Amino acid sequence: MTWKGISKTLAAVIAIIIVIIAILGAYYAYVSRVVTPTVAVTTTVTTTVVTTTTVVTSPASPTTSPTPTQTVTTTPTTATVITTPKPSKVFHKRAVLLTIEDPVSRTSMLQSGTADFGEIPIESIPSLLGQKMNGFEIVMDKVPPEPRILGAILNCYKGREIFNNSLVRQALAYATPYELIIETVAEGYMVPLHVIIPRGLLGYTEYGIIN
Image 1 (cartoon, one colour):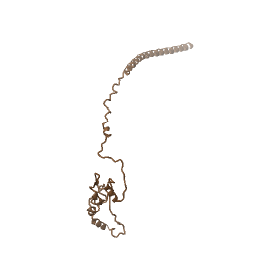
Image 2 (cartoon, rainbow, N blue to C red; image 1 turned 120 degrees about the vertical axis):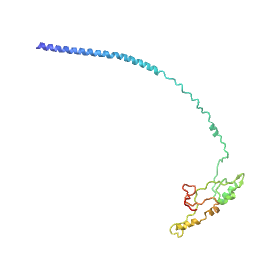
Image 3 (cartoon, rainbow, N blue to C red; image 1 turned 45 degrees about the horizontal axis):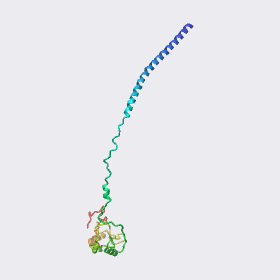
C-alpha cells in the first residue's frame, strides 16, 4: 500500500515537473518570437525619423517679403492745396455786437456806416434800400418768411357777452381786412395766417379753409 502511494506521488511530481518545463519552454519560445520583430520595427522607425527630419530641415526661404514698392506715400498734393486757401472775400478778425433799443438810432447807424447790419423797422426799409456809402450799398437780406405768429387774442371766456359766441368770432374773422393790414402796416413783408400752424411748418394746410 505504501509503495503504491509513493509511486503515485512520484508520478504526480514528475508530471508536474514536466508540465512546468513545457510551460517554460513555450514561454521562452514565445518571447524569442516576439522580441525578434521588435528589432526590425525599431530599425524602420529610426529610418523614418531620419527621413522626416530631412524633410523638416528644408524650409522654403521667404523671398516674398520686402516688395511693397507700389505704396508710395510721398505725393500729398491735396495737403498743399488745402494749406493755400484763396478766399474771394476778406475775413473779419472780430465782430462787435451792440444792443440798440431805439429803432431810429439803429437806422442812423446803418446809414452812416457805423453798423454793418441791423434790424430796421419795416417803415424805414424803402428809404434805406439803394443808398451807397464808401463803395457799399444797403440791401435787404431776402430770406424766406419766418414762421412767427403775430396777432391779438380775444377774451372768449364765460362772462363776455359778445365774443363768447362762436358765430360772432367767425364773423369778425371774415370781416378783418388781412391784405390791407399787410400792405399798409407790414409793407407787404408778411403773409396772412388762416390756420393755427404757420406756413413753413410741418402740418400746414389750407384744405377746407375759406380765405
